Length: 254
Length: 219
Image 1 (cartoon, rainbow over the protein chains, first blue to last red):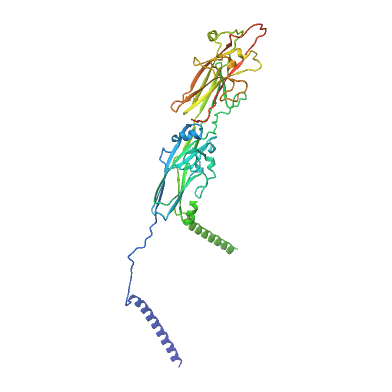
Image 2 (image 1 turned 135 degrees about the vertical axis):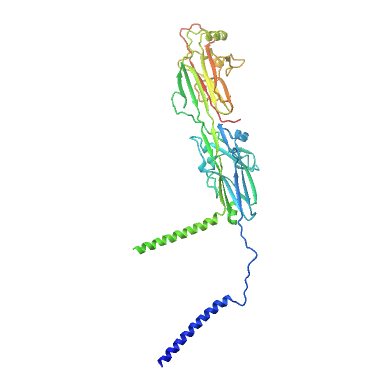
């Protein structure tokens, strides 16, 4: 009786094992040998190609302001002779996608690239910036909306001028939405008439005028005063940025 | 204890990882296109230099026992005897600039007892006579008292200083050589001076000044 029970169990185990192997074989073979098979491969490629933004700041060598033997001058004279102390530069932008992309750019003076003299500081350098249509971007116009330049602006007065791209000495900013844009600017700079030329010595003889040197030679007395040359240097900077949404766009338009 | 430290390290690393991820995502989101251009060559403004010097002889005019003289006699006599005051004004400037200067004369107060209406003044520039400031057809030429006292540029001289001559030297960008100008000052007693009943010697002492005030370029 007990032997019959063991035989039955062995048979059941054997049947289940065979059944399991069959199911496995059917599953594998069934996939491999489906009765109907369809494979559809797309013929149209969905493509995303990034657009291109190409900007340049073109300030030809030799077209920067490089003045020597300059003296303080009135705004009137500086403007009258402005062609002798100007720099022209162009900002171009080529956008591959028109209308959907807006680029904002700002022109400023790089604080890191201002080199002041001992006394010739930004409080004594005046500048003016005009665009290609003679709109006065920096400087004093002769009345509201006038395109007649009558004065410059001290660089020090621009220190608080800022926007989202330039946090100091911001001169101008613009939005570009067209595919090809070329903006030409003219920068003027001169020494303000409030600057006093410094002297090269500190000899202070109370009987003489300040910083006058007195020498005696061959029965003659010579009094002399010489000024000292100083240099002020600065570089422009252009920062550009793509605007991502309408909110940012409107913010720049204001 | 060690387990606790490991736990803290894992926590810190996790926070760091999340922070980097956030920065990366934000960074990508807000810098799709951003660029900066620097001007290649700096704009440069260099000021020029100005030098003005005044050289005078150590010994000034000293005429003892002066007698009234006509201009012709005075010039001949005093030049021959070297009783003149020769001085030089030198100017130099780099670049285009006009350097003006004024020559003036100041009476030494206290030690001058002679009335200045009897003092004659004559000035030569590079061996040629110059017209003194304040002269006109009516007034007698070279009379000290006719000179004007208000200096054009050197207004700081308020001590009765009188202007003799005003001029300027001009420099351009190609020529910055120093300009030396020699002057000869002659002073004498005017021929109209009356020597009657003079019991005491009278003197007149004066100093020559040179002032230059270069103002900002305006035209």
